[in-house]
Length: 349
Image (cartoon, rainbow, N blue to C red):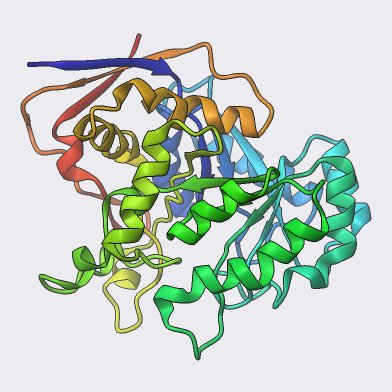
């Protein structure tokens, strides 16, 4: 029996589009079905000014080859020691950005320009609070003494909670939540929200380790235990407006993923909607799918949902979907969600 759902064109509130050949290879997969795409600023060098954000957005749009007049990349600045309150004010007032992103230095890909503590940026955070600029947080401790699976919870308790308590006017998104601690913190503070990825919703650490090491599932923060995955899924499935889709789609060539020291990142943009739809279908919650992928994030960032409508249909598996892509430079990237993509089709209503 065919299962059918209709929903507003979704938004992706956390995506890495890279630059140059990789940008050209991956951007169409976001532009095809997503409307807004909140683009991360962790390039080399990082995006730290209004002018850089505008130029990067122009490169993104120039790289799109599919028919996608709906596609709207929205930009973020990287919170570094050199980012001034004046530049934040300029970028916000000019409409060049919709947020500022904090990375703990050394936590993940291209995070070396980040900080060691959120409150070291208090002057910028206070400016953001006064203007209404959302703060995006990669919540992960870099303390080497901490177990890798405990680092999100530790950062949330030690760094994010004090900021939320001290600055109740500062709106914060805890990005790519990977633990129940993140879910609980978002629910505790009125000004906190959370994005959740397809891979954290549907995978746990046994998927990475139990039947042979799968480096394509290595990401930061790491995919955690089954108990944490169930908490994330419950939050997404609940319809709670504080949680929404942010794919954290992050392409790396296989040469970097299947290396002695693997790069962190999962490329899920092509099949993110299919993965999430299958989760909601399995839990008989397709009536709440639209809120998670199209409504909650739009409301969080102060925009109306898209007026475009999409249709997804679930049928018997057809031809196996493509599982890799290749850049013009010859780099191969593996796609996440191939099994779910075989079950679902997407079209414009």
